Image (cartoon, rainbow over all chains, first blue to last red; front, top):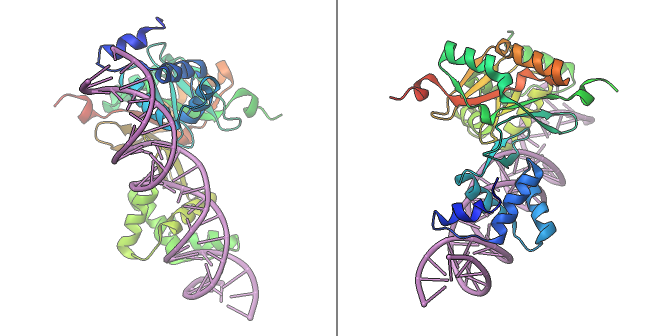
Length: 140
Length: 140
DNA sequence: GTGTTTGCAAATGTTTTGCAGTGTC
DNA sequence: GACACTGCAAAACATTTGCAAACAC
C-alpha cells in the first residue's frame, strides 16, 4: 500500500496532487466506510476550511481512479470505502446502524445458483445485507 | 387477494378510504415495483390532480398497514412493491436497469452461515443484488 | 358536524453546478 | 504562466412539514 501512489496516479492522468485529495483518501481509509458528510468531518479535523463540495468532487474523482468505491446503504446514504484492498460485502444493522464487513465468499452458493439458473451475474462488490446484528437481534 | 380490503384495513384503524389511497395501491400493484415518482405518474393517468405529496404520504401509510413495502435500489432510489403476496428479493441489472424478482430461498445458505457465524439475522425481504442480467451480461 | 385527508406552498437536506480566485506543475 | 482545483453561492432535486380548504364518515 504505497502511501504516495495518489500523486502518481494523478500525474499519470495529467491531474494535480492537492492536500485536499490526499486528506479525502486518508479519511476514507481511516473510516473504513463513511458517507460524504462523515468524510468531511474527518477531513475538517485536519483542515477545517475544506468545503463539502470538494469532498464530493474528490470522492467522485477517487472513484474514477479506482482508489475508492461506494455502495448505497439503508436510507440510500452513499457510503464510500477504500478499493483495491480486500473486496467485501456489508452487513448493515437496522437496530444500531453498525456496518460490518464480511467475506464475499459467503455469497458463492447464491451467485452460482443465480448464474446457472438465470444467467444473472451478481456484482458481489456492491452487496449490502440488512438485518440485525448479534447484539440487537438477541433481546436484551 | 380481496381488492376491497383496503377500506376494511383503513376502517379498522379509524382511518378513511379515499380514491387517492386506492389509486396509489393500485399503481404499486400494477408497477410491481416503482419509485414514488413512477407511482405518481401512474396515478396521474387516472387522476392528474393528485399531488406528489399525497403519493409520499399514502405510500408511507400503506407500508404501515402492511400492504406495501420498500427497498432501496441502486442510486438509493426508494422502490415500493406490494406486500402480503410472496416475499422476494430483487435482482437489479446495472446494464438495462431491469428489476427482476427472485425467491428468497436462494439466500438460505448465506443467511444460515451468517447467523451461525456472526449471529447476524438477515432481513431477506429487503435484499437487493446488483449485477448484469442474462441479456446484458452476455456480450451481444 | 367532526376529524381526517388533501393540495399547495414553503422548508429541509443532500448533491450538483457556475464562476472567480488560488495553487500546482 | 497555463490550466486544474478550490471555495463560495446559488441551483437543482427529492422529500417533509404547516396550514387552510375539502371530503369521508
